[in-house]
Length: 314
Ligand code: ATP
Image 1 (tube, helix red, strand yellow):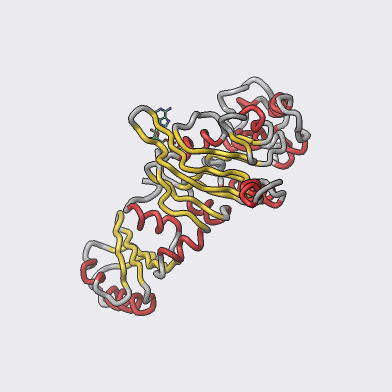
Image 2: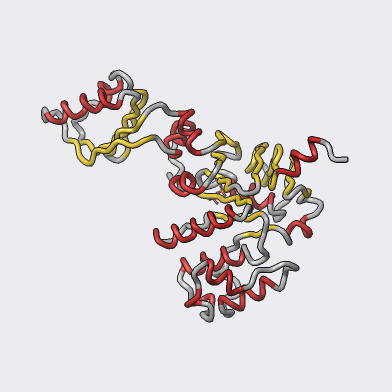
């Protein structure tokens, strides 16, 4: 008879609990826990070296963990890594592999590793590689190779899909096309774990994100909730010349923080109208020069900045 606990467990596509991974003295992942559900896109978001790839590789069964537990589709990946590999899809970098095969041949080759597989033509058309199906991998552009690597991750019609920075290096059109593929997978109830540095991608695609830094989860939740719980403010952003007196802006009603980076000032304020009025009037008096002013809601990047004092992409 199954208990409530079994039923809860069966509901998670991925369940990570207290995961620790060390490389010698370096603790790359320091006791992190999260779950990913079927039909969910979950993002691991963090700067270079935060521990995202290590976390994903442990979950995929490619690296041994030092402590904690990882279950994928209700299976312990340490004990049953062979079995679970039939049911998951991992995006690998194909550029250096199988360079002298065609896109179609690589898909057929990868398909032969699995009991269950999708037709190569279906994947070719899903990733919009029809014109390149008979081209050698080495002759594909970076973006086409990237799309092929996603097609290969889907070759066994996986229930859980791991995508490591899937849109890095893609032009905006190809990036949007890949987002649509990910949304298609989500609609088919696949669980998708992706790593990214890109806030826009995380905000657009992910149902939930975990913000990771130095092997710790700093915050986790729906992107909009993370922003809301960290900010009641909006951000007023503008370019300013050196005459602006940032110190005096700090005292304005509603202003909670001011950042200045390479001539771009960001004022976080709960009183957007009042703060704007003061800024515009002092700039209008010629006390300093203001350019390219815009008001925007806070983003995940602002959340990361607030939590760490740094940008995700330094
Ligand atoms: P990126 O976005 O740059 O891929 P990441 O968040 O994926 O970064 P990891 O690649 O998991 O981070 O690296 C986490 C930490 O572990 C880093 O300090 C990295 O230098 C270190 N590290 C990663 N792989 C190894 C390894 N094989 N041996 C030793 N240290 C490693």
